[in-house]
Each structure stands twice: as C-alpha cells, then as structure tokens.
Image (cartoon, rainbow, N blue to C red; front, side):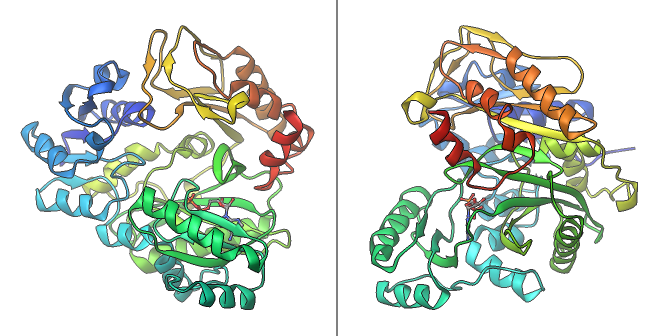
Length: 451
Ligand code: ADP
C-alpha cells in the first residue's frame, strides 16, 4: 500500500517532538527534526532521521513559518506535524503548508482560526446547541460599558483575552470597583503575549471542575470521542495533573459531554484530533469554554485508557485514511494520571529553573510511561516552557492508579535543578486527591497548606 506521507518535518521541540518522531518510526515514516541554537543537544534531534538548524533567536526559530516551510521543501517532506504550542494553532501556518503542497497534520485552517478566537468560538458553539457561559461576544472597548455588562451578568466575572492561552490574559473580578484595574491588566498581558489585546467578559464559575473531551474525526464525517480528561488540578489556571477518566463524574453528565462534543464537531465538519474544554459546576451544569485544535500535552492519559495512539491516527487522518474503528469498538479501561514535571522552584514562587541535570533516575515497571526529552548531563535552556516531561501511570482502578503514582514518583529522581516532583509526591498522599474530590481551586488551596 502506498502511503501519501513518507516524510514528516516535526515543527517543534522537546518531549512532543520526540513523541511525534516515535509515532513516525512505528508507521515507517521518515522524520525530520529542526533545532534552535540552544537545542543542539536535544534528544529529538538525535533520534530523527534528519535534522536542520534554525539560526537566530531561539524562540523565533520554531515560529518562523517561511523558514520552516522552505526547510520542509528542501528536505522533501510531504507533511509537517506542529505538535502543541508554537505554530500548532496558527491558521496562517496551516494555509502556508497547503500553498506549498505540504500536508499540515491537523485540522482545517478555518477551524483553527475559529477556535483561536475564544469569543467567536463561543458564539459558534452556542449556535449549534452547546451550552456556554453568559458573557460578551464582542471585545470590550469602553470600561464603563464593561462595568455595566458585568453588573448585569453579576459579579464575580472573569475578563479573558480572546486570543489567549496558557492561563494568561485572564483576571477574575469580584467587585465592580476592581474592574478597571483588572481590565487594564488583562488587556496589557494579552497584548504582550498574544499581540492582540481584545478581551471579553464571562460569568465566573466558583470552584468548577475542568473536564475536556478528546475527539477524533476523519475527512469523511466520522466523528468519535475518546472519553474525557479531568484537568481540575491547576496552578494559576494552568494544568499540573490530568486524569482519565474523571473520578466522581456523574454518568449522565459524562454522556452529555460526549454527545454535545461529537455533535458539534460533526456539524462543523471538523477533522483531525481536538479537545473541547468544559467547566462543570457544583450543580453539574456544563459550559463550553474553549477548544484546542491540536494534540494536547495530556493526550497520553487518553491513550492509556483507550489504547488508541492519538498521534499516529492524527497522521493517518491527514493522509486521508478513514478511521479504522467505530465508537462502540473503543474500550475504556482503567484510570490514567499524568504528572507534568516542571523545572521550577516551589520554594521560589515556582520560578522556572534552567541548568544541567546531574542525576536522572526514572521510574519504570508495569503501567508507567515517561514522555520526556531530558537525560543525565542535559542542559535545560532558559528560553522555553518549564515543562521538561510527563510521568503517566495507569492501573485498572483509581486506587491502583494512585498507589502506582506514589510508587513511581518516589522512584523519580532529577538532580541539578529544582522540579515539582516533591509537590506531586505530596498531592498523591493528600486525602482529597485520594478521594477524587477535585475542582479548579484544589491546588491553590493545598499550596497554602503545603507551604
Ligand atoms: P487558557 O486558554 O488560557 O488555558 P481557558 O479558557 O482554557 O484558558 O481557562 C483556563 C482555566 O481558567 C480553566 O480551566 C478554569 O480553571 C479557569 N476558567 C476559565 N474560565 C472560567 C470561568 N468562566 N469561571 C471559572 N473559571 C474559569
């Protein structure tokens, strides 16, 4: 059988670059790595079939559309996988790939553009019957007007950057008197990180759970879900631990999340993989907050409970393959927990740390998976995200998964720079965690207790 994709350029770095290269190898597809000046020692660079340097600013390197496309053409790649972050949610990049005759391993540019705008995507999802939180559907330009709308919605409200991500450009406003300052802070942060200051208002939900549905869709209208992930364990609105399936989720709520997610994706004609994020409040109401049109950091927990290789299937969908399984053929089995391993100092307000790893001992044994790109002697550059890897555990039941997590985290040693492994060790011994009593305020509250 002749495959359309024979060589993939991996437009990313770190653990996800390695993850994609591994997926390609198993599919007999050649992989091409790119690396910035500070990433010469990156393990993904060594494991790919070919590699090319990107000179200049280390951050811009992975964002340079023209350069990456010309490298892909030079290396005769027929596809580009963007991973997560960097250009993964750039409609412009997807279009540029298309123009150059290169397959973009991801959804259509129109869907990337739609879901890149949180405000526009809420409007679109509401139209097709997905519940959303009350809020504005155009950017706030006038502070007085913003205060009036907030009053009508009722405090607390949250101000959000329309084009934001990673927990940035968001401010909770509890009282009207704080609106002005919070609005200015949110828009300034949005402008700084995303280039666009557009911000909107949304009702703030007190202590919700963050539950997201993984969807997978081919080019022929087959839309399936791969279950949900509970990403309620967050620090400052950024995920730290992810669980699949969600412990303590009402079965009717679960079914409803699957139903609205797959229906919406079918109606939109979405293809590739994607994640639809919801908040679930204490009364079990569900609200769509945003969709990520790419593979997510936390995809391994879904892979472990379903046995579906999300990256491989993503590549096949991009090639034009039909999904080879039906919804009822997906068997959900056991519980998986992912711990994001960040190079950061919990004693110094979680400041990102860089430096050389002097000792690196990983856990192993049944039900333990590690997705990382670090090794003994590796120097973590200061230029990128502080996440250096992920520990993922799987067991047949929740109790078993928690026990495995404890054992695996106790075996995990990284020395030379601080990490959040000690924090994870505390969490897996915490009573609320063990009982699965989680919401988005869980970790911030525990941190006060742990410190
Ligand atoms: P980002 O794209 O920056 O990750 P999201 O919109 O996905 O932002 O929200 C990230 C987190 O912020 C959520 O998981 C939740 O904890 C919190 N959050 C977002 N919107 C609301 C809201 N309306 N009410 C309460 N918490 C919210």
